Structures are given as C-alpha cells and as structure tokens.
Length: 123
Image (cartoon, rainbow, N blue to C red; front, side):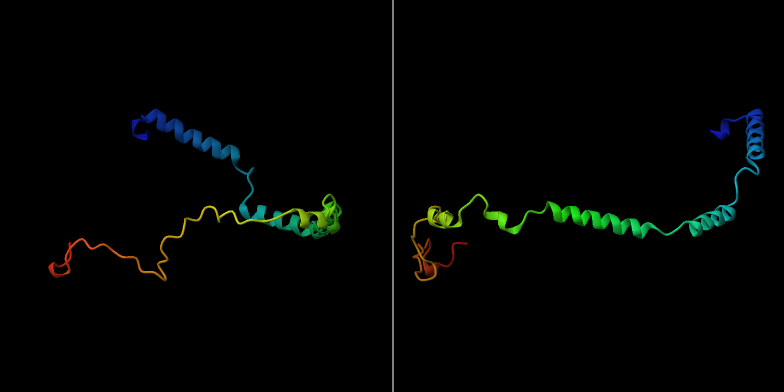
C-alpha cells in the first residue's frame, strides 16, 4: 500500500506523525516513573486482605454447618425394622445367563475335523 503513495502522501504522513509526537510529548510518563508510583501505592495500602478472607471463610463455614441435616435424620420417614423385613433381593443377572451346555474347563468339546489327518491341514 505504501508503494502506491505519491510524494504528497508521503509528506502528509510524515507531517502527521511529527504533529502527533509533538502533541503527545510530555503527557505520557516514562515506564520507570509509572513503576515507582505503583510501588509507592502498593506499600502505602494496608494489608487487610487476609482478615477479609478469614471472615468470609468463617461465615461460609457457619452457613455450611447450619445447612447440614443432623445424622439421625436419615431414617426420619423409614422404619428400619419394617424395611429389613419387607424387602428381598434377587440377582438380576440370573435370568440373563445362558443355559449350561458345555463346561470348557471340565469337558472338552468334540471338534469335527474337516480334513483327514494324513493329508495335512486345510489351509
């Protein structure tokens, strides 16, 4: 884009750049001055953050403890004796197991051979 600029465009660009530098001169502090001011502000600020954090943690802990139900409320609506005598458990997988046909650990199934042993393997 700069290659398409003629002499008047280049002159205008350099004058604008110089005018901008002149307008901003003295308004922007240097890095060292900004850093030193930040360090002074940080040193002058009181260190109360840990106090606020401790108070917030104590309040949160008190709310959490207050909202937890007591341990004996687990059986509030259930009678444990009735629960133990009225329920039974059956393994759901018993129905899903296949019928016993061959026990590969105790019984060796008979394999039907497709070729004669003397002639070698089929492959």
